[in-house]
Length: 120
Image 1: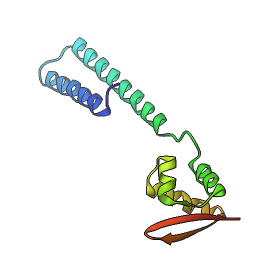
Image 2 (image 1 turned 90 degrees about the horizontal axis):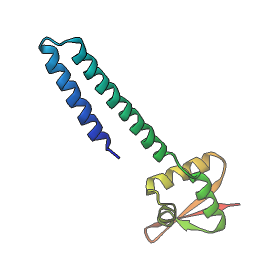
Image 3 (image 1 turned 180 degrees about the horizontal axis):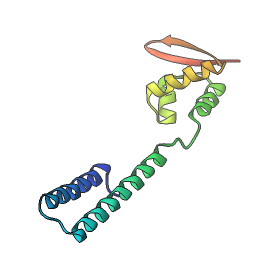
Image 4 (image 1 turned 120 degrees about the horizontal axis):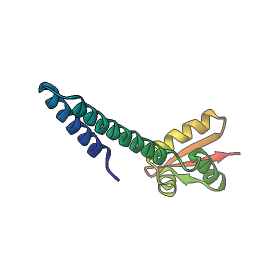
């Protein structure tokens, strides 16, 4: 699969060819060919962006996963990061969302680590 940068590079080359030809006297067929290749590259770019967008969509509800883990036991933020394969910042963000949803989550700092507990 081509990278986004590679597709942009190809598009830029096609546009450059087209600009060069425009400075000369261009016949209709050359313009048509250039436009077709630019359209094809734009379509590839759009398809690639859609694929990337699909890959970025969460496969699981992270909020629910954090809630499930906290329901079972007390966890440190680092443990949650490791188990869910997400960043520290994301875990903190999810905790904030859970708190605004009405869940009582207390945090305790022990030896440089923050432990989270769901109060029932």
